[in-house]
Image 1 (cartoon, rainbow, N blue to C red):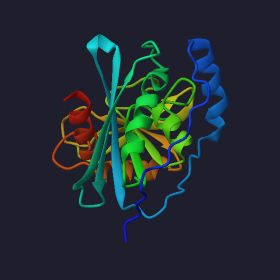
Image 2: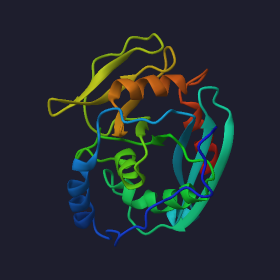
Image 3: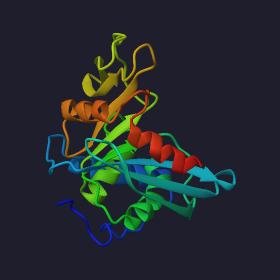
Image 4: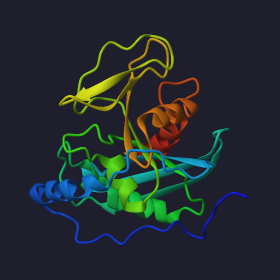
Length: 226
């Protein structure tokens, strides 16, 4: 039987940082809570997480799309809007986006077993991108699925689907450059929380069909930007 609740449990946020300095300090405090090994329950539902902005950035619009696993059929979706309260600063985007994401998550009846976030996990200057931040806050396994590099370098990825190369930053493997479709740009996969890199790659490939982006990301992006 699928695991469901009346409403997904989300945390009550403590005092949310309002300055870059405070946000960086919080990232540095929380990054030690990231679990970089597999701690997964049986996966029945995967969810895409994406965020867009309206009113010239004044309103944050967060979207969640829950798909069944492994057949990737849309089961539930949610959209939440909030006034944007944190500036756009690369490396601190989770402070701009997560309050609205939590509002969207709280609307769900189905509890996702795995979150695929449009953004970084540990492939981040302080090893704490949005996939880590969200995963730690709600204690759900999470993967960062980014369309571009924030930190790190990698070798040329072979053109075949499923090939990948380590993404390395400061002599540490922080993710993978993954070819999800032949002869298209790779995606950048990194651990968010409670999952290993190898398992994260497997799930991203399992969520990817004919397109470069996983179906989770495609559904969430339509909602976030629609």
